[in-house]
Image (cartoon, rainbow, N blue to C red; front, side):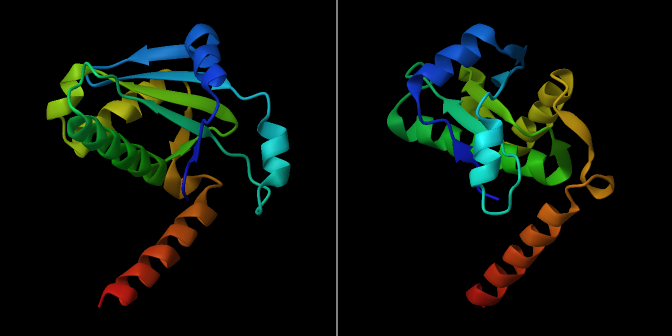
Length: 151
C-alpha cells in the first residue's frame, strides 16, 4: 500500500519538537501520535488506520540527483520493513537522512529502520502472525498482476 505523505510543514515541526526519536547511522526516525488518525481512518476506503510518512533529505547530502537517490532508497527500505513487520498505525513518522545514507544500500537501511522502529516501540510482531495478513495478500495480488503485465 502506498504511504500517505505529510503535506503540511507545521506537522514536521510538531514531530521534531514533540515526538520520540531514534538515531541510527544512516537515518534519524521521529514518531508522534497523529491526532487526526481517527478522521483519516474514517476517510480511508478500507476504514484502516494509516501512518503519515515524511522524508527529510537536506542539501548537506549533496546535489538533487543524490538527494533523490537517497529518498528512493529510504522509501524502498521503508516498504521492505512494512512488508516484513507490522508497524503500529495512526502515527506521524518523519525519517531524516544523514550524510552516511549516500553510500548506503536499501538492505542496510531496511535493517537499520527495523532496529529504529523496534527501539521506538512501533513494531508489534512479524508480519506472518499479526492482523496485517490482509495487506500481505493485497501486495501479493498486486505483485502477481504486475508480473503478468510485464511478460
